[in-house]
Length: 116
Image (cartoon, rainbow, N blue to C red; front, side, top):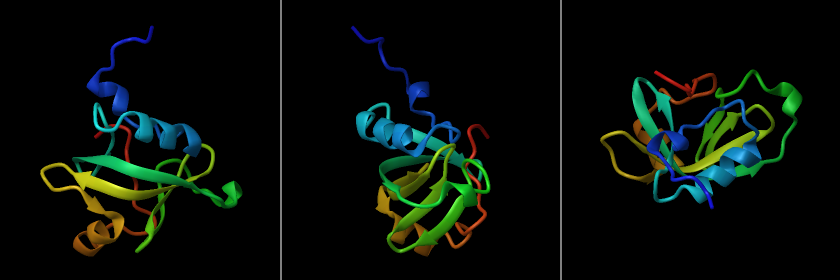
């Protein structure tokens, strides 16, 4: 038997490895969902993938490496995660490309926080 899930179980700790975060995103859709904090708002992640890349260049967990049409690359404790689909608190679910078009401040060096 597994313990009953709580909403707080969906909070992403960016020090986890990319594989663990991706697996939690897949497992927790639709409820409780995986989320992080960005600009004092909750950012729910609906779809993500692991990206092959050198981990030695990682500036630290939760930092955006690149925001491009094909996704938002975020460094984790071990590896790089590409966010493909997300939803900002109070907004609709959208692709990374749509999100970046409406939020120009998501750029290399932005930080996703564990808590606000």
